[in-house]
Length: 126
Image 1 (cartoon, rainbow, N blue to C red):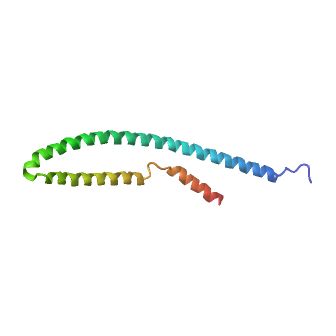
Image 2 (image 1 turned 30 degrees about the vertical axis):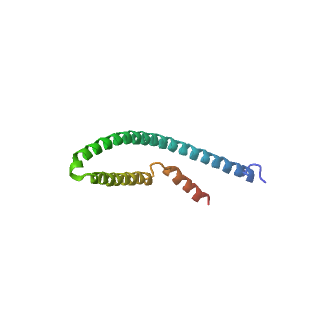
Image 3 (image 1 turned 180 degrees about the vertical axis):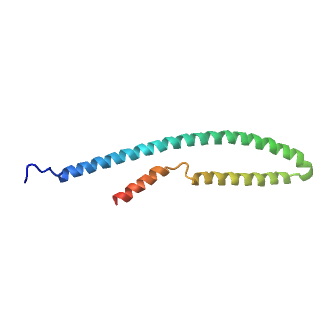
């Protein structure tokens, strides 16, 4: 061996370097997940507050409009007006449920960036 030749890193130093890189990768992914969780939290809080306010307003509006319609239509339709209102409110409830389902399917409450990065990491390691 020539004393002037540079030393090559051994197996242990290579494994230590790989372990350091994997640890740094895990830390960066955890930070990314934490950032996305904070965004999800703020979106979820806003969504819950708006939903709560909307539900209270909707309950009052439905109560007053329903009472008005029943009073105005009772002479002409009798008890049938109650059936008509029940069908109408059922259709509205189904529509609202479908809207909520579509919002949830858009992935606004998911972790799309983190999941994509974790998939890339998995593919790179395999």
